[in-house]
Amino acid sequence: MFAQRAEDMRPATHYRSERISAVNGEYFFSTREGTLEGPYFTRVDAQREIDFYIQRQSGASQQRER
Figure (tube, rainbow, N blue to C red):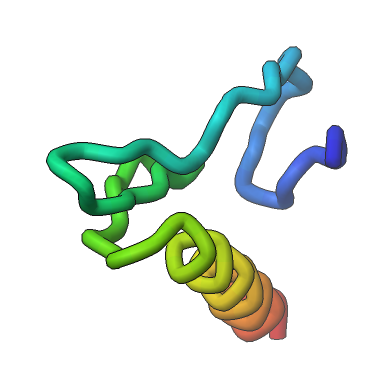
């Protein structure tokens, strides 16, 4: 998970942190792009949505390369 994205112009050190946070009983996840996605009812829902988000971002990245 230390690969450089095509949009990243220079190498950098990335630190792994907890992506999911709970606020008032609702779950959110943060993205590399600096957005906060949610709310979700459970941590499992938030994790599932992270997986979907990554798939969407990967697809969008591939579309831009064409």
